[in-house]
Image (cartoon, rainbow, N blue to C red; front, top):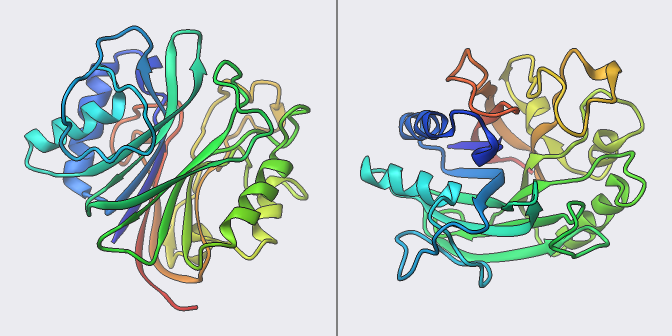
Length: 278
C-alpha cells in the first residue's frame, strides 16, 4: 500500500496546467491508497461549483470553486477511470487572492473527517493560522490519516513547539494515526522540531524504510526559509510519521525531476507500507 504527501504550491506555480496534468498522470500510474496535500488553493473570486460533486466528502461548509486544485485533480483522475474520495479544508487567505488549504485523497471511501486547530490564532486573514485535516476510510477504518502543514520552529508568534504540543495532545484520542505533510521541521537539526516529534513516540517512516533515498524534499531556498543559509544544500521537511512501528518497504522522493517531473517548490514523499507491528 502506498502513501504519498506533497506540498503542491498548486495555483501559484508557473505553467500550472501542465504541472496539474503531470501530477494526475503520476497518480494514475502509482495510485496511492492515501494522499496528503498541502497549499491546495482556489482563487477567491473564481466561479462557485454547484450541485453534487463526485467523490467529495465535505469536512466543513467550504465553498468549492472551479479552479480548486484537488477538485480538478480528482476530476481528471476520474476521467481516466481512477476514482478517489477526497476532502478539502480552507485554512487561510494566501497571497491576498487564494483560499489556501490542505486536502486528503483516498482510494477507499472516506467515512469520517476531523479538523484540529493547532495554532493559537484561528483567523482566516492571518497566514500563521495552522490546522490539521484528518480522515478515516472504509478500507482502513481503524487508522486516521492527517494532512499537516506546521509553522517554523523560530516563528516568534506561532512557534512549532506549541503547535506540536497541541497536536500530540489531540492524537492521544487515536490509537493508530499517520501524520503526513510539510512539517517545516528539517531532519538533522538537533533540539528543534524534528527531534521533538521523534521524542514523542512517533516513528519516522523514512527511518523505518528498508530501502530509502537521500530524502531531500526542498532542494533550493523557498519562501519562509531564505534566511537559513545553513540549509542551502537542501532539507527533508516533508515527512510521513506513524504512531505505530510499521513495515515500510521503501521511502522515496518523487516529483523531483528524477522520479516524475518537478511540479512544485517541494518534492513529494511516497512510502510503501505493509502493516503495523506494534
